[in-house]
Length: 377
Ligand SMILES: Cc1ncc(COP(=O)(O)O)c(C=O)c1O
Picture 1 (tube, rainbow, N blue to C red):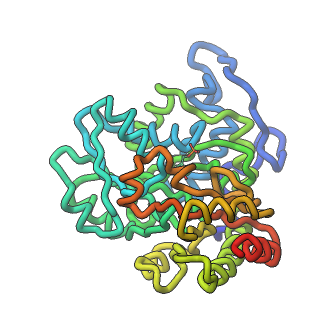
Picture 2: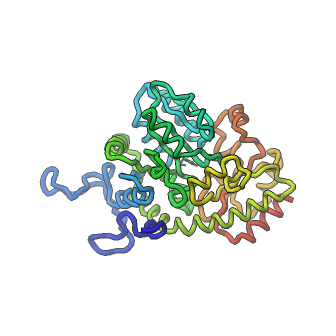
Picture 3: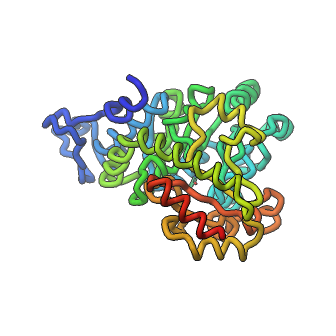
């Protein structure tokens, strides 16, 4: 099955009981047993639900792993994955991970004895030099948010394997349509499915795919024990969203390339961050490990005042957190998605007050360029 076909026919694409071509929403919490333990594969919906199972099979197939898991949010998915580790363990993470990932590692999971170090993983030497006897995993986000830095997944996973560590990749920005970390050597891939996989700004969800039966068993144990599962309605919305992921990613890519060209030539834009630009420091790695560069672009307009002026003038770019939907979204990371990162750390990372991030949607490109033109005047 090719990629767009798999998005539609992967997993469990129809209801075996009725032939319905849209998998039904099993809005149910428990299941009749004929005798004690005599059930048809489902006992209780925290442990397993048919609609969630259909989604979990679908994401497993499109990421190319051995099992999939659906959670109530991307953060619930990330937390469950880190709960595979024990008190005293250490994880090395990409330095400009999503602010919520930084927050959960440094303000919540640290209280349970899980230690973390954040380094620029686009430089592989930084990973090597932070490995300690108690390190258990390398956690990569690539491309990063909001500076679109790229880590070489295959090379990082190679280093991790040499030291007996797991490689975990947050694949939210690229999606499995463009990038498949498990094929590149990762052990666990996760998503904020709230973004491109859902694609319509109408569901909050997280997905995880693992590459071995042992990890599948361990993660199911955490999922069932801690209970942060996705409900059947939201599972169905994600299955529907994923069916159009391919055409949405292709169209976003086309619009984004036009916008990047426009921004690069604009006098009021100081710098554009996009892995598809040839001068981007990690452009060659991006080209090697992903089939597309994605729909996220960040650019620096010089100051918070300039950013505010731009935000007040745009018509088709909605000022909102989140990304990856049909409508174009705009945000200022320093005061929104990355506000939970201390100011001095933001400065170290290069997340300036004038940095604007856009998630390019599926509107007509002429309207988007006209909108940015008047707003940047
Ligand atoms: C790259 C990335 N990972 C994880 C998350 C967290 O996902 P959620 O908001 O679905 O909990 C986000 C949210 O913006 C994100 O951008």
